[in-house]
Amino acid sequence: MNIHLQKPTLDHEAEIRMYVEEFLAAADKRQIPGAGGVEDASSYSEWVLAKDKLEYRGNISEDGVLATQFIALDTEDRIIGFIQLRHRLNESLRNIGGHISYSIRPSERRKGYGSEMLRLCLGEAAKLNITSVLVTCDATNAGSEKVIRTNGGILENTCIGKTGSLKKRFWIHL
Image (cartoon, rainbow, N blue to C red):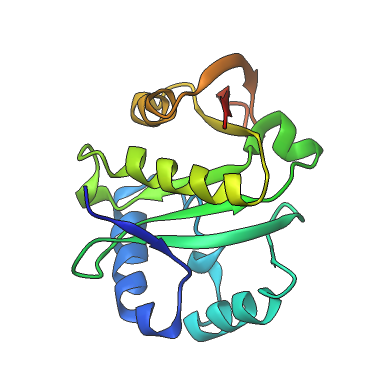
């Protein structure tokens, strides 16, 4: 599996627009997990520049904590997924959201990319001295559960999410 994580730049605009279009066309929800709100940004360049401007302090996630935004690229610089690493947990993230949120391009699912993206992001978490990483998924999302378990996820419990759906909470010890 040959993918790498990179922070998004202005050069990725066309590819990210295609990703967002494909994701939203295939999804029953309007939010792209791990994408840092790119789907709602007034312009792509403003989204990237806002991330760059805050980079020296760390990006602030929608949950109000420092976060690093990555895209996963293949060898042809095609975006495979989004993944966001939150540097700490607030109450909401500790209960439901976790340290890491991610999504895979619909046409690239079930190819092992999710497991590799999470593995690479766990390496980034280790660089921040995060020793235990919380990753959650919808209880009905067997694909995400497999990705998390493949990377050493240990189920702690199942709880009710913000929308009333069941969420599984896994810890990965680094």
